[in-house]
Image 1 (cartoon, rainbow, N blue to C red):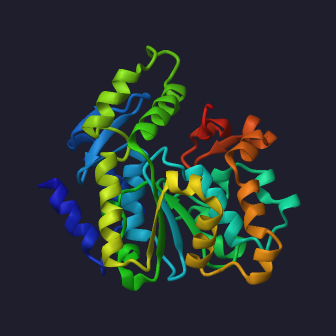
Image 2 (cartoon, rainbow, N blue to C red):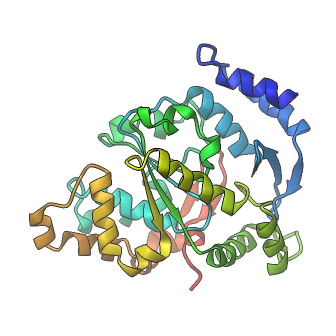
Length: 307
């Protein structure tokens, strides 16, 4: 009953609750929603069919009511551990190749997760989001792990003009990568995290952002409704032919590779610069830290494969 009331409030276009009101609704939901342990010290809450930690749950509620999209916005969407770090780097470098020389590139000084904002911890006053136009020209790039169902209809509706790049990956590899990631996040005072624990939760769909299969299916089905607005990638296919996929990315983002750039080897340069081997070897990704806008910090190296 409470969740139905919340949905009605959220769907009223003419009435946008203030941030304080949404925070109160969020606090109430935390007491009412089904919950589970997240395996790394936080609780998960079952919200509209998907499991979220407290901060992303507040983020989706705030975004539904306050995020103002632009028709040129491009979103990188994915479930966790499917190749997001690599795609972030490829998208940012491809889109802004005329702005930055690879010898003095922002990715030499900051981790891939800092090159464009994450919407999952959205706050209306977030500087990185509200001032994107001053930082970089349109189109703006955003990243999210939210399932398609939890994103505002204002950006998923084909008429919005917004575009999505979605990447999925072999579930077995997602599972192994997730185990390593959660193992490193787990507080030291808790018992070590076993692979069997992660395996069971993954198969049940009781993981951060919910069932992996439901997440992929949501975006896959959306491609049939708006095929020109969603570019659906498979991680394994990108690995087999990264140059072809960079050209697809460039075309989709509205900055196609020119004949001259092709002759100058620009695509190959982007692929080599954004390779995980190259990025992983950079000092910023060996020792640097990514600080999310909820204050949570993660070492940059945690976003890269362990081998």
